[in-house]
Length: 275
Image 1 (cartoon, rainbow, N blue to C red):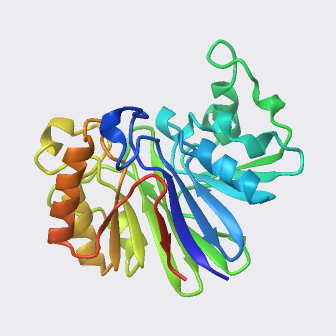
Image 2: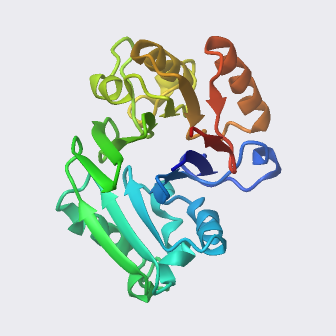
């Protein structure tokens, strides 16, 4: 079976629909992993709406949604995920940052779709939805021959990083995490060790970072440093700052590729095939 990664939303913080966000995209976080004939979804930002349309056209009947955390930009596409309204569609939703707080992941997604903030309650979703909360640091197998490893990330209200392994390949999704300059995060290093592809929170540059300490995000330069130290094959720059319009992103792309050849800056609609 194959292994591929498709980006449906690559922007951080807030969706950006403007002429200045066309090349790299303006939808918020959502990544599709097609692995072992199954679909894993990472986060439910605005990009998940377009993923849902694609799954319907492809007649996909099931998926597993892995949530890093539940800040708005990572969940506000969920009510617009059409397959969840289809009775024959099975969707398992998992999160590692909540535990029993707020009623777990089910409670948070339910509250998002309640009056007065949204007119359609989650009960309108007639799909076969199930919810599971796990402690960050756990490992599990959502499908045969697919292993998911997790770790806790440094982010306000907590977040979870993921490593998806199959057939000798590994993809890591490390977004919404803040580094400490000069002190690489041991959790991140352990999770990404030797990975084929690391999708990393590169919201800021090192020059911008000092003014953003405490906001819960990292830089592309830290992504390069971590991937070099952990022996990662390819870095993917992800979770672009809304203020980084296309010309700024083009400068970042050139700088990243000069610093670490083979690195990729994620764009809405981009697909990477591993196997």
